[in-house]
Image (tube, rainbow, N blue to C red; front, side, top):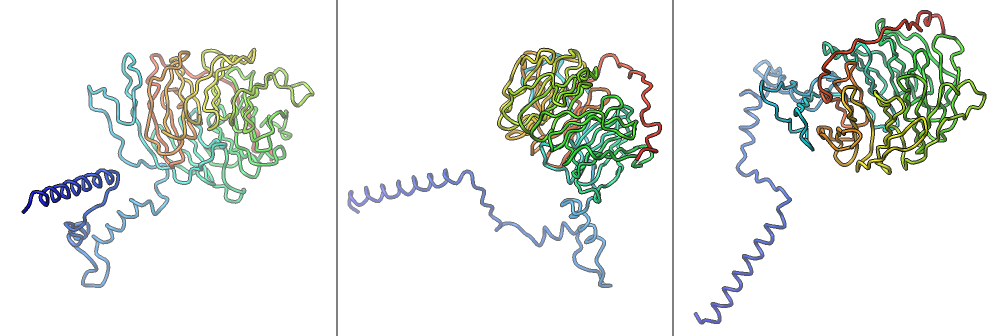
Length: 444
């Protein structure tokens, strides 16, 4: 063999090796399984517990029926797992303080906080940014709207019950809100009605209608006043104690009202809308004849304003969050209307909650990470990021003791996070003589 031929042969072999290596690199992202070594008959035999087909009598074997039952549970072929645990919640080992994989600690704190998480199924939860489908009542019962039904989850014992379904009321449910007494709940509907229910008696007691002309997506209470916001841009105060319930109408929004929050004092109301506007209304001005007499009209957000939260230790401090085109959390002095700070979070802000015991704020987000973020206020340094949801985290609610947060997402799961720890001193609930529902059953 001459030297020239050997040289050409060597070059050809080298080019072939380079080509093979290049192809192997190009296919690194693609997984092509090789099933040649798989024994499907044996795998099926093991899944069937060693028995397949029917028994001698021609009926299905117990192993096959168990197999079908397991498949039904795996693929959620029934709706029996509403607000049921996906997996048995794990408990941390004694003496271990490592963060779970769903929590990313951004900056170590002292002492380091353990944030456990548990998950419930919530099939039928609407992927609707402008609705408000989750609320946690005074008696430790969580209300969640799933399509045209409202379910109650008792966080004390883990029991679940259905309050009622609204298939005949132009479904679906678009908002829920517990009354201050923790016994009654307001349900906003797509047909513009608001229903009041007694949860102890599991009974519908009254329907508020005649104010809105389209769906009611936001609700909040101020003592005996139920405030509702609609897709028609109207905000209506209803006194649930009297027959002619509409006592005040606020006009200012020209898009759907998707956020409503009364301050702790009950003197100021914040409203956010799909028109990118944030309004501050003052109760002392509600007696004026002008229907558009707002205290402040704030135009700084560049997307829908749904997330609203009043600071628990500074009465005139309000936090607001903007939608996908805005992505900012803004802080306001509601006495002057001044914007104190604005932080770009990098994603849609769906909900906001303050920590009652520390100067911290919790936000929930959409694309891309669908996370919850704990911020230190006022520095707005990230303390932790909580992962686990696979779609945008639309709704959050806080437990009566202020420690646990429930989050509901478009992935149809409800997660509980012990994000705010345990308060050092338990604060007794304030005593009130509030009984607005004494004669409500007589008012229709």
